[in-house]
Image (tube, rainbow, N blue to C red; front, side, top):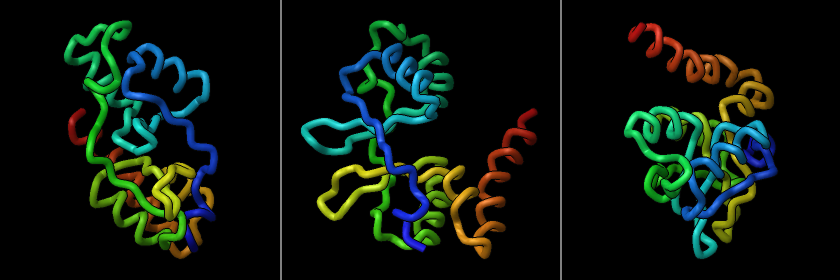
Length: 145
């Protein structure tokens, strides 16, 4: 199975000059947990709901004034729409991420691949791997409780 068959096709993205408040509202309004960040027609980072809570809030950032550029994750992992789904899953596991931007051959964002996408659309033979990836974080949270 190829990534394009499992990914969420509609990929919203934002610019790094938006504020944390603007990004949080966009995530809330669209009911999504991450936003790719683009500048000069290139993917340069990612901001997640966890980044907003665990990085920005924990550091005391003013959400109305702090720009996404200051809190985004740089050097993000991505995959291509014609990659094999198992290779993309392996990359997500290695990087310990839940969402991965999907690019086309021209390196333009065409979607997002998430653990939810994998749980819903991946072939049954990969379901054990998807379950293991999802439970990895639950186990880590339980260990810290």
